[in-house]
Length: 335
Length: 300
Image (cartoon, rainbow over all chains, first blue to last red; front, side):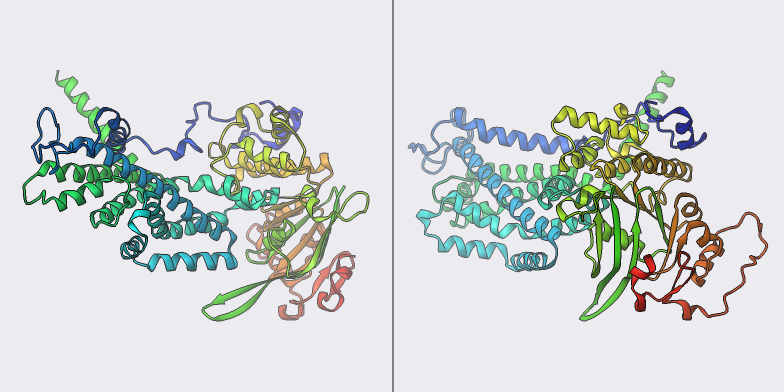
């Protein structure tokens, strides 16, 4: 024990037989907590989810370097997949793989943009409102409740229809989707902030003299990170699906190609009726796989937020491990 | 040295149920003075308003009326921006008062930096280590740990170090040991007593335990339903309680000498309701009506 107090006082302060021996720190304490506790525990769910998302992201990022111009028109319309065109061609002879790669990139871009903007908006309204309390809280939560009851897709259709098609870039669509998609997350963040605001460590930071913005950013925000991450992932899924829906209806961004515009052109080219499955199936599969991957990641993040799920997961894994061990033991004894 | 004067402190909470509003008076005209080197214990049951007094002194709640003034050694009033250099608080629950996300070092380094007690990384680390050793924690082993890796007593020591970090002269300890293991309580209380001796601190010790109040404090204030019902030197209040509520409290504590026999405390002739709004002041040796005379008379 490294202590500046003389030994007789040390004895006085920790009488023999106390459980609070100051030197009795467990040397083998597992350093899992704080920042480490924010990371999800490894599970097959998380692995598959991350694998899908990373694969599709790489596909969209690196793919365009290897494929040609997606807009090149050839006189080989609607050829099925072959060695030259791995995913066949469209009605006007464009390479579907090249289109798919570019469309994936476009969709990811919009998803990411909307995810960042919607999360920022919900954090702004949810956390600041929840922490400030009083009039600001009432005003912010009234505003987010109003945004919540406005039906998202019809509003998006109206707004997108209102903006002229030639000005309707991917930023416009991203902003529209972000504005209609932040409210639910803001409510959850507000509730969690209200609970954190009353914690003693926030009061202690105020007693220490921390400024309000620092209390929010340094004391409260880190404890909201798992929640924010999960909401970010969720809003990316929602954005990609909504954007695909809009583009499919012909209301999407005019200057970019996304998975939704691919489906729109496939629909207009009667791909289904002509049984050109290679035209409409790949974008559908990419959307489904990406959504699935993000959802799997989200389940893993859920385990951090909801301790009950985490406990269940740990117990299940422990049980599985014990089962494997006993199996191994019986097998080895049998051998 | 800083003295803290509390005068006529009143706190009302507004209760809302549906459209009806009502007021709850949590603290009614409480007044006392904290002097360097002395511990004042504030004793009362849950809901008696003692924690509200602590939160008002720590500036976490605004008093409805009344004044809390810190006066420094030169006799000048401590103005707002410097108030928190002088007055700090130790919270009840060490499991809740440390942020699970941050290391022990962060908790102590922040007040040091905020109050200009150190500059630069190395100096701060050194001062954090000094503070940890003052509260009898092995600095090297504890500094980079997170709160959940420490025991309750160790966390409370970290919380005490945090309160000392700004150089506080007045420390409000809100039930500092009630959430701790019985085995580590004495250690933390002795630590507080030693720090008080060494730094000549003025301590407000809030508790519901009469035994530790008598042992660790010089004066005792007994609170009931927002009012101070009795005040005086610790031994006088515990051994010769005059207010019916204090008598009740004193009788509730097990007396090892009686060993199951009934207490011999003779009941006061008046009924409890007559004395409810009066304060018995052992310093003055008489009953005081704070509503008529004010807390200045009571504290003098």
